Image (cartoon, rainbow, N blue to C red; front, side, top):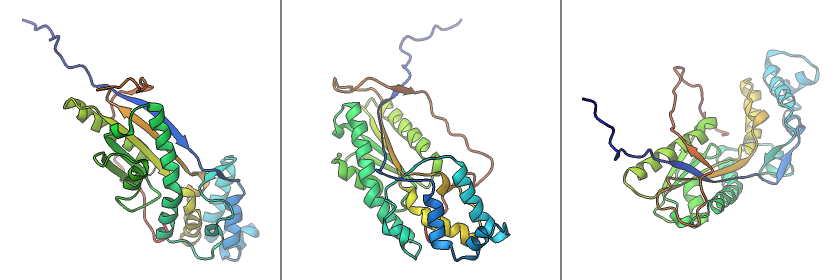
Length: 276
């Protein structure tokens, strides 16, 4: 005998986006910036001499190809936390990863703080009501660092649960959203309010000098300096339990989050070298 479905069946959990924001630095690099940077530091190298004489030999192919791709992207401006006049671009020595991380923290944290505050303001709730913070960055390598410093700068509760996702490259923001989604599902299962701040901040332009050096010395083209600029973005997610009058209604709802692993290893990754 068929059994009628119970009217007490649990309602599917609702995880919603309730606040969004993005922040860009004030400095912008023109398309000519990267070729000029390359010429400044590698004009006397065998690679750049070959470029000037249009000799496409094996030892020049990587740098020439990278600069060609850079100009063909048609990207008019790339945002950077550093102006064209910053000493980093002019020093003879390639900056170490330690130096780059320090610069990233100096300029990236204010960018992330501004994005987070704007997203929280759009949400309309109390910052002390944020239960989870999921931060993602590839610009630094220390942990905890970016996530804990950001929470301190924002004046958040010491009880907010923090997770730092590092080394995920372009998949990092998706991984952060998936992590926040699953954490809020967990809060829903025990009947507790959950509000997650997801914050991504990248200041990858500071690695342009190191990328160029790696291209020249290792003879390996690299798309990173041709594409990436600096930015920080934030979203606030809610499990819609215990919603206050000041909190805005959902902008979007997240319906499921399913990762898919490829069968090929090394498809995405973040390889650490002495310069970054």
